[in-house]
Length: 400
Ligand SMILES: Cc1ncc(COP(=O)(O)O)c(C=O)c1O
Image (cartoon, rainbow, N blue to C red; front, side, top):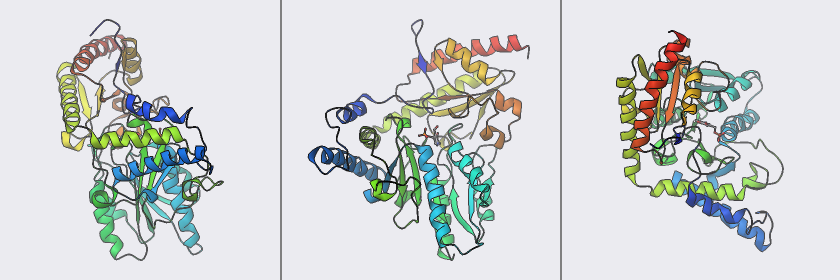
């Protein structure tokens, strides 16, 4: 690597916009600037772009375009899925009838904080534990289902460890239970970290009712999200006003971002399978390199590579503060992170690693490295060289 080269290894935090995606978005900032709700030709041009993107998303998820709602982010989609469903269900409940949600201890804050907030409104929430591998156990889920259970919300891929959750199995289990249940248990998954890699056929494969996506994790723009809502799922709008997005999310559509997201998903659909294999190879090289080169290091998350998404690897290094490590790596031109982008400023030990049974010290000494489509073998080699030097230096300074 050239002196002063910058290496980005934080693709789980965000991805750069693909040049082709940017090109697809460009006209909607200036030439094609109509408001999609206007009935004149400027408006129709913008509406056509939204319709096309909705089709692209529907194709990606193998669902109907009428089941797609564009939002302002995945955080909004998660909030909308949970709060919007509950708001609609509350209307059908008898006075005093309980609402029960099952989620997991390792969800993204967009789900967890929403659940904490709903607890203040007397909603009963169960937070499923995970094993040392960071994966929930189906028997634990089964044991927590009660007649009042309305919603199960479990993420597809964990954003800190890359652990793949058994979404398809949960979908099948709930379908079985729903056959003999008075009211349906709805199923939501946050699939933000899965979209680049895993099967996202919501109907045939996963059996979910609600499904969250984000634009900026798939080489698309920031500030755009998707919520798939299976036809017939009760849901109430959380943003009232105009009747955009089937009357479920008021506000003039972000046309350029919507066009970008649709295009980005289409690119994933046609992407060469070699890309996934290549990323898995690089990830395995990274993991092997770290564990053999850096003494007293450990991999956090599932041991079996096929239980991890290809792009994330999470490590702990004895005697090293994760934050110091991130800063030192940055000084060497390498971008990585301690955990999720949303909590890395909080300086609290990761709730995900703690749920997996790591000690506070181990959780504080963690580093998440995430790869993407521009990561090269040379970058990984350089990273491994720098990491070893930096870890040894920090250990000497801390005297640990
Ligand atoms: C699993 C997961 N869910 C939700 C989000 C939030 O996405 P957004 O930035 O689009 O709100 C993230 C982003 O880090 C994520 O990784």
